Image (cartoon, rainbow, N blue to C red; front, side, top):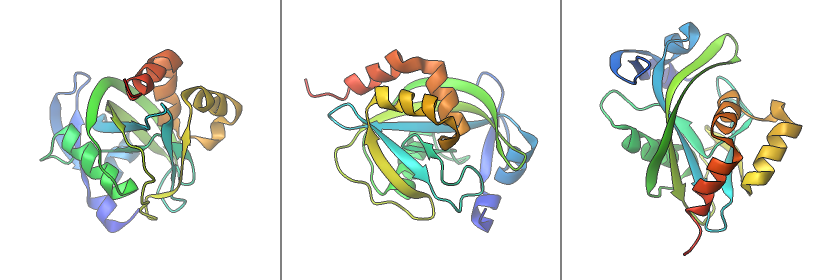
Amino acid sequence: MSLIEQEETLILVDEQDNRVGTGPKLQVHLQGKLHRAFSVFVFNRQGQLMLQQRASGKYHSGGLWTNSCCGHPRPDEDNAQAATRRLYEEMGFTCTLTEVDRILYRVEVSDGLVEHEYNHTFMGVFDAAPVLNPEEAEGWQWISVADVFTAVEQAPQDFTAWFKVILAHFGQPVIQGWAQRCLPH
C-alpha cells in the first residue's frame, strides 16, 4: 500500500450507515471496523457488465477480477461524488451513476485484512473502452451477467471476496435487471 493509501481516511459508520467517526484506511482494515464504501457496476448498451482486474501490486486482492470499480468516500464527499471520482481514477472515464441498493458485509480479504463495509451500490452505462490506471487495474472485460455467475461458480478464487458476496446477496435476476435498465428502449 502506498503512503497515500495508508493515510487515506475512511468514514466509520454504524449498521444504519450513521457516521460515528473516521479512521486511517490500513488501521480500519486491520481491525475490521465497519466503514462506508461503494461498488460500481458499469454496463454497456448490450447489457454486459464491465469487470476490472485489480492491479497485481494492490495491497490486497491483487490480480483478482471484480466489479467495475469500488472504493471509499472521503469524509468531505458524498457517495455519488466518491464513486464518480474513483471510477475516473481507476478506469479513466466517468458516466452518470445511479445508486441501486445497499449491502452490509464483513469478509476477510488477505494478510489479516477485513472489508467490513456498509456498501452503496451504483450502476452506470458506458459503451467505450476504459483507459486503465496501471496502479489500480491491469485488465478489464465486458461479460454477460449470466457468464459472470458461471465464472464465479467455476473459479471463485479468481474473484474478489466482496464481489462474490455482492453477487450472492443480490442474485442473478436483480443484477440482470440492472443490466436491462441499460438497454436502449
